[in-house]
Amino acid sequence: MEACPACGSRRVYRSRTRSVFERIRRQVTTKRPFRCHNCNWRGWVAEAARLVTPRQPAKASPPPPDLSAVDSALDGPAKRDG
Image (cartoon, rainbow, N blue to C red; front, side):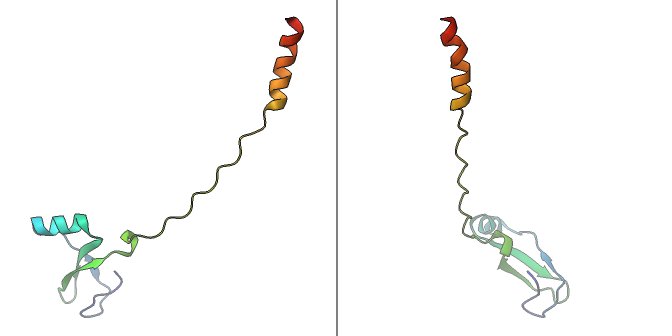
């Protein structure tokens, strides 16, 4: 939260929950309690960092390396011995 909605002060900080109801509300919503140092306003505001945002698409994993040359090199001496 950048500024108090009541007085516009930037001296706003997170407030503690006071009751069981507030603790439950904090767990089921993205809103958090805040308080203003200047005017003593207290209210619930959605935190920008906690808002649900679309996830970035997962990057495709690179294809596995081609190990056929290694396999043929390893199979070569075994075929000659057998």
